[in-house]
Every structure is written in structure tokens, then in C-alpha cells.
Length: 328
Image (cartoon, rainbow, N blue to C red):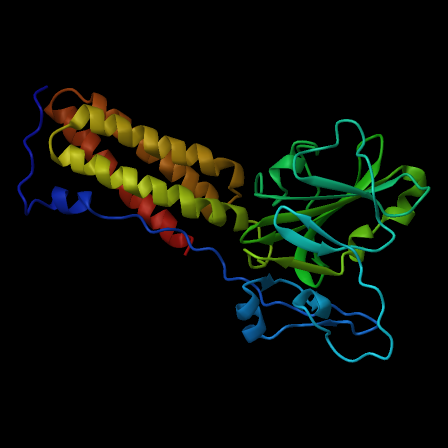
């Protein structure tokens, strides 16, 4: 079939070629909350102090972190150890000691501690982007069962969190708590042998403060990981889509339609692990329908098939736009 004539400047097809997809918004961060302590050594810094030190305080941070004291207590106790993992600062109990992870249980950027001397207990701390809708960092998710129990609402260092477990993998009992932030997810796993599990249960409560120089805490939600990932995926797709549709308007149908089909298919593949039933799953399906429609457009032969394929593209694009709108 001969190439279709290029549309005139006022042709509606040319105007559609410049339309943009809207980026899916991420829920706003939650406010920092003070950590309840018995000795009142922790305070919530003011907004002015936070701006001045250019460090986001996710939970209440000890006064000495800011170069002074939080108050004027009668007796000053030694600060708890502070560890840095993936750009996050965590205050851990003084009795936690670095430990060697069990074989096959290590990962890049992971820190392992023994919460109690002499007991087969471990606390693993890891940060990173979520692997899927569970909000568990990718470095840890591959070591866990494919099917997880539903998460329970929890708090870690005063911040909203999800907790999975307790679970038994046949060798150990373990429980996992995750705190999502705009800079990644912090995961704390407590594990022990079944005989000593009661002593390890709730070890994450020992983390009394959490800080990050580049992130805000977020409230866990089933579609949170999808929204975070979609922000980048949709922005990338939008650029390819505008360029591809402009090429279509210039009459480069086969090549442009093929590129558009691959761009939408790649976006669907990137978002699929984060989708949950509802609008996010519908978005992945809508992306795949657009990909199929452009693929058919590129191979359509004859006037009748071309018109039908072009109509299918218009409908699929409209469906995708409506689906993305449901996520706002």
C-alpha cells in the first residue's frame, strides 16, 4: 500500500500527535513524627533546622545528630550506635553487633546484626527500590517466598510501615517490616530458629530513629510502588509517543507504528510487577492494547484495513488516557 498523505497543519491528526500523557502522581509524604522514648532524648527538629542542615528527618532524630543537645537532661546517656545503609541513617540498639549472614542470605547493600549475644537470631537491614507491589526491596524479595501473607499495618521508628509474617521457611522463623520513602524502601527482617523465635519477635522495634538526606516517608499502600514506578515509565513513554506520532503524521507509518508498539509494550512490561487488581492492572492492560493496535496499524494492508487499524489506535489511546486519569 502506498504511504498515506501527510496531514495538513490544521488536520486533527497533527494536533493529536502533540498531545501528552499525564504522569501518575505519587501520594504526598507523611509528616515526620516524634519517637516515644522514656528519657526524652529525642526531639522533632523544626522546619527551619531541617532546611538549614539540608537533611530530611523522617523520624525524630537525637539532638547530638544536629550538633547540639535536644534539651537539658540531668544525666546524659551515651548515644545509640548509628549505621548508614543505602543513604539512610538508622539508630540501632547498643547491644546489636555486626554478624555474618547465613549462607545464601546476603545481598549487596545489606547489613546483618545479632540482636542478642549467644542466641541464633539475626536482624537484616536493607534499602532499595521495591521489587513489586509488596514494597520489599528487590535485593531481599528474591530470597522470600513468591506468595506472601497479607501485610499488617505497623510503625517503625514512628513511621507508617507494613509487616509481613511471622513466616516459616522450614529452617527459620522470620518477620519483615518495610518503610517506603521517596528515596527507596527500608526493610528490617527479624529471624531466628523456631526454638528462639519468641526472643527475636519484634526486633525491629529497637530501631529508634531513621533519617535520610534525600527522601520523604510515604504511607504504604497497595498501589504505591506502581505509582512511583509509573512516574518514570509514563514520562519516558510520553516522549517516545509524541515523537512516534509525529513520524506517523509525516507518513512514516510502518516504522513509526512499530516503534510505538514496542514503546507501549515495554511500558506494560515495566509496570506489570507492580500492578494490583483495579486501576493499576487496567493500566497495564490498556498499554498492551495500545501496543497491539499500533502493531496492527503498521502491518495493515489496503484502505479498509488501514482505516480499521487507525480507528482501533484512536480507541485504544482514549482508553489508556481514561485509565490513567483514574489513577490521579
